[in-house]
Length: 219
Ligand SMILES: [Fe+2]
Ligand SMILES: [Fe+2]
Image (cartoon, rainbow, N blue to C red; front, side, top):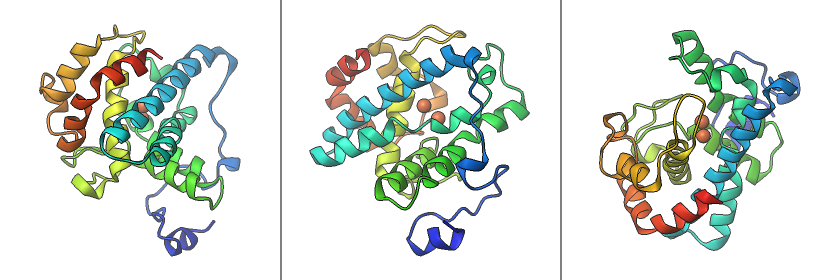
């Protein structure tokens, strides 16, 4: 689909300069056999975020059908990381500015990957979530620096579930937190880095369903 085609359907136009061609058939995921452990971990993370997002969506009043759709789309939120070298994802040292810039391409790459599937509503919905899941309520996120309700509600839900899941997961460079510690980070401002990043309404809803979230994370 052309850029004009996206705009005509109300879908966000691809207005940024992408460092890759538009369609996923032209860009190759950076998947190699030696990277399999990283990719399995990424798959577990994405499925976890899918489960959690469906639960949090229900707590915010989404219908069962909307929650199922959100869960399926949220499970694709990091698909753009398939285009990021695996060694960056688990690097123990801080990323260099260039590495960080590469990593921060993954929402756009995920959007392009999913949007290129074709003009179906689910692909568009999932692509928008992939694009927006690192946007922050206070405007400090990426790739666009959207603020507040400029970010779709579903993306704001996925953003909270993404961070909750990431905090709880063990990675080569960190231990996983327990549920209570992750909730304190997100809901009680224990981490200055997270202050103001989330929609307060979504955070309040997280508190109302936290037992289910904890169970769903465990799988
Ligand atoms: Fe991500
Ligand atoms: Fe993620």
